[in-house]
Image (cartoon, rainbow, N blue to C red; front, side, top):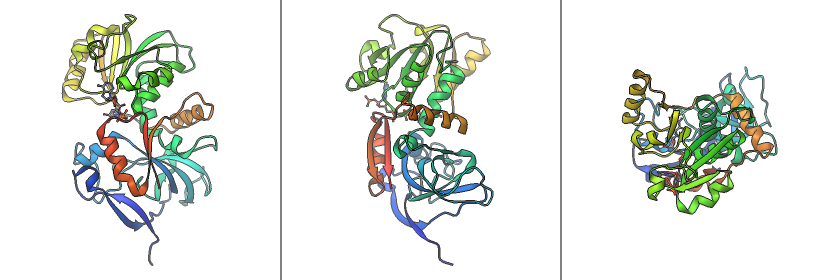
Length: 329
Ligand SMILES: NC(=O)c1ccc[n+]([C@@H]2O[C@H](COP(=O)([O-])OP(=O)(O)OC[C@H]3O[C@@H](n4cnc5c(N)ncnc54)[C@H](OP(=O)(O)O)[C@@H]3O)[C@@H](O)[C@H]2O)c1
C-alpha cells in the first residue's frame, strides 16, 4: 500500500548548519496506539535543535538519520491511536516531541497522548508552540529550584535573569513577576525597554562593565539566578549572591558541573544547580492557561514558512533572537 506523503525538513548527518537542511517528501507518520497525529500549524525552534545537529549530544541524539528536527509543536489532531482516550480528531493541541526522534519541521507529526495537551481557541498555534522547552524550563527553574510561588504567596526574593530577551529568559521574567520577587535582568542595549516591558524591575546591558559584573543597580543580592546566558564563571556570580543564593545553570559547562560538585561536597550555602527541563503536561497546561488569561505572553522574534525553515535555523544559530522563532507549515 502506498503511504500519503508530506513536506518535511531534515538532515542526514551531523554538522552543516542551515545549509545542511533538506526539503523532502516523506510518508505521513502513523500514530501508534498511545499517539496522536497532529497537522502542524506552528513549531518553535530552540538552541538544542541545532546543538543536536552539531553533534553535541551524540551518540544519544538524534537516534537515527535522516532526522526531522523540532520538538515544540502546535496544531490540530487529525487521527488518534487505538488507545488514546483524552483527545480526538479536531482538538487543537500543543505537543512535545522527543529530542531523539524529533519530527516537528513537517506538515504532520505524531506525539504521545501523555505529552499532548489541549489548547483553547484564545491561544494561537504560534503562542502555544513557543511554550514547551522555553517556558517549561523557566517555570521549573523558578518554581522547583528558586522556590518562587507563582500565586505571589511566597516570601519576597531577589531574582537575576541573564539573557532575559531570549526564548527562556523572556518567559522567566514574566513568570518571576507573578511571584513575590524583585527581578534584575540582563540583555543587550537594544532590548532594555523590551525587557522592562515584560516586568523586570531593573535591567542591565550585558556589554557594559556593570552588566558583565552582574551588579544590581539598587545593590540587591540575588537569592536565585536563572542563568540563560553562557560563558559567565562562578567567580562573577559569587559576590552578587545572598548567603543562600543559587545559580540555576540551564547550559552547564564542565567547569560549572565541577563547581556544582565542589559546592555540594563542601556543604556550601551558595550553590550552582544544573538544570535540565523535565516535561510535565500539567505544567504545560498551566502555562497555556496563563496565556489564555493574558498573565503570560509569548513574544515572537520572527516567523517563517516551512519552505524557509533554513532561515529560521540560521536565525536561531545566530543567538540574537528576541523571544521565540516560529516556523509555520
Ligand atoms: N537545560 C535546559 O533544559 C534548557 C532548556 C532551554 C534552553 N536551554 C539553553 O539555554 C540557553 C538559552 O536558550 P534560549 O532559547 O533562551 O536562547 P535564545 O533565545 O537563542 O537567546 C538569545 C538571546 O540571548 C541574549 N544573550 C546572549 N548572550 C547574552 C549575555 N551574555 N547576556 C545577556 N543576554 C545575552 C541575546 O541578546 P543579544 O541579541 O542582545 O546578544 C538574545 O536576545 C541555550 O544555551 C539553550 O540551549 C537549556
